Amino acid sequence: MRGALSTLGSPTYGADASGLICGFRFDATGLGQPVSASEALQWLNHASVTDSPQAAGFVWLHFNLAHAAAEKWLHDHVTLSDQFYESLRDGSRSTRVELDDDMLVAVVNDVHYDFAFEPSDISTLWLSVGPRLVVSARLQPLRSIDRLRDAVKRGAKLSSSVELLVHLMHDQGDVLVNIVRGTTLRVDGIEDTLLAGRLEKKRADLGSLRRLLVRLQRLLAPEPAALFRLLKKPPAWIVEDDLQELRQSTEEFNVALSDMAALQERIKLLQEEIAGRVAEANNRILYVLTVVTVLALPINIMAGLFGMNVGGIPFGENAHGFWIVVAIVAIFTLTAAWLAFRRPRD
Image 1 (cartoon, rainbow, N blue to C red):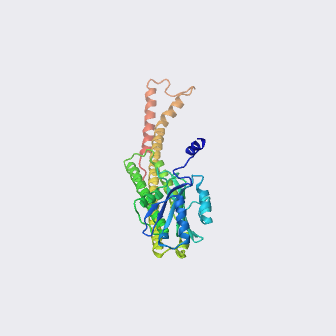
Image 2: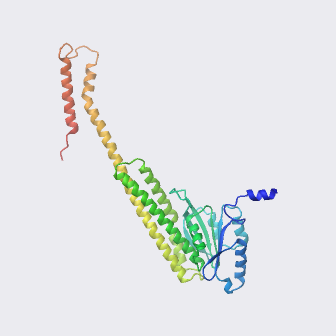
Image 3: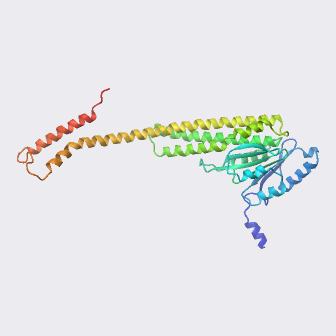
C-alpha cells in the first residue's frame, strides 16, 4: 500500500516512467505510429541486425528533461553523441545545427506553449538526429514541437529523420511569423494611440516589445558557421532532397528574422517620436513657467523694495502713492511681457 501511494505521489510531468512524453515509429510510407519506450528499443535492435523491409523508417522519441529519469534512461538505453549531452548543460543556448559523430545535434530555441509576449517565455529544445533515431528533449512545453506532434498524429508523412527536423524548423518559422504578426498588431495599436495624442504608458510597452524582439532574434537566429559546415559536408545518410529542404527552411527562417529586425527599427522610431513629444511638452511647460516668472518679477522687486522697514520710502506721504506704484509695476510688467512674447528676427 505504501509503495502504491509512493508511485501515485511521484511527479511524472506528463511523461511515463522513463520521462518519455511521446514516441512514434515511422514506416516506409512515412506515417507515424505511437510506440512506447520499450517498443522503440525493440524496433531499433531489430533494425540494427536486419535490412528487411520491416526495418525501414525511423523512430522519434520526445522526452521531458524535467523528469529525473529521462537523461538516465537515454544514457542507459540509446547511443547518442557526446555533443548532445554536453549541449544539455552548455551555457550557450544559441540556435544551431551541427554535425558530430555522423549525427546531427540541434539546439533550437522556441517559445512556451502559453507564450504571453514576455522575454522569459523562451526555452530550449535539444535534438539528436540520426538515420534511424531522433531524440528530442525539453524542459517546458514548447509550441513548435507540440505542433509537430499534432501534425504526426493527424497523419503527416515524414519519410526521413532529416525531414522531421525540417518540419520542426518550418513549424518554428510559422510560430515566429505569428509572433511578428502579433507584435505588429500591438505596435499598430500603440501608434494609433500616439497619433491620437494619448501617450499614457505606451513608451514602456514599446520598450518591453523591443527587448522581446531582440532576445528572440538573438536566440532564434541559427549560427551560420555550423550550418554552413553541415550543408557543405553532410553525412552520407542525408539525401540531396532533404539537404535542399533544410537549406530552404533556413532561408525562410532568415526572412522571418529580417521582418523582426524591420519591426525593431519601427519600434525604435516610435520610441524616438514619443521621446520627442515628451521633450516638446516639457519644453512647453518650462517656457510657461519662465514667462510666469518673468511677469511676476517687477511686482516682486517693487514689493521687496517698498517692504523694507527704512526711512525715505517714496510716495509714503503722497495720497496717490499706491496707484503710482501700481502704474510703475504695470508698465514694467507689460514691458517684460513684450520682451518675453516677441518673435525673434531671423
